[in-house]
Length: 393
Ligand SMILES: *Cc1c(COP(=O)(O)O)cnc(C)c1O
Image (tube, rainbow, N blue to C red; front, side, top):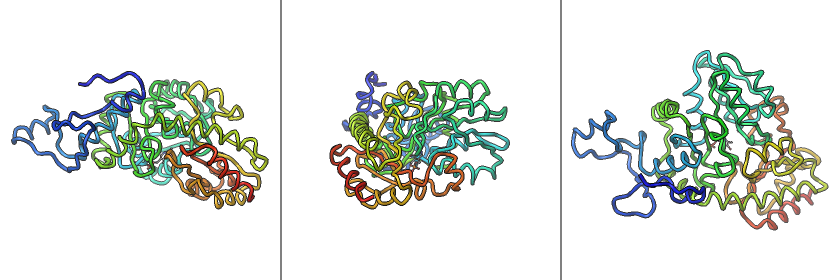
């Protein structure tokens, strides 16, 4: 085994890694569905788990493993499981930990489908759930039941930027025998490491910051405990929601620049947030880097930095928000986030439109809320673009 370097940025470049016998400096794309055995005995040994090695890509592939090992190391977990999408990662966790008669507690303002799929699909398996305001620790305490198996958090949450105290929430959940999973998509392991704070499982939509270039869809789950990993692996491999080697290669390549991308996007976001906060046409701005954020102190403690996601409300509500979105020229009007380009979208009519209006309102997703994922362009250009679009309001 290669010894891993200590620093986060060095790990981004050198962690994982597969020693390719031809001497390739980066892990090649093993674009193959299956692996040749030298003889029948070797095939038998691999199936019996007596010999390390590959069998079939749904069960394991060197390019995929390189990515899984890297993210597991960055998150401080036992091992990773790369999936075909972020939602495949979410469902791998749900299917592994929840069955008939089990209960889950989730934050009310999750990524839309992470809540939607639980409400729509899982009741038929007999799973019970409560979605609560997990930014309030006493609400978590109230919601935990003897049959609660999973506390599912997203922090900062999409799109309200609400922040949950992962360490305190984990203590409460563990005291009741529940596991804690954190969707760390908004922060990436560079800004926040939930497993170090007490969570049991961390997951990502790699579509966002980990890949960082808006050109693949993928996900990953990392467990702290080997046994939990084995349970998750069984589900992932048998449901068949594995990532493709080529997708994995692109995610691993994108990951190398995570630290410098996030630093730059975050620097831009601080400037954009300050600009928006002072703008006369803006009602409010939600950004963990602003002292006006309700969990500002917690964000300072729990995260290395506030990241590059900002939500804001334009005075004049939905119509005014639409005017901004229809008039931006540099920012791309599109859902998703965490890429090098600035993206702008409207959760109430787009990513969270499937939630009933009342649930949206309860979760703080107002009709006028606009979400921006600040990219790594020049800050002046992003601000100029927003300024000219706001002039039209
Ligand atoms: C995008 C996203 C997901 C889902 O990921 P996909 O790759 O689109 O399936 C889950 N959680 C969060 C926070 C996301 O932003």
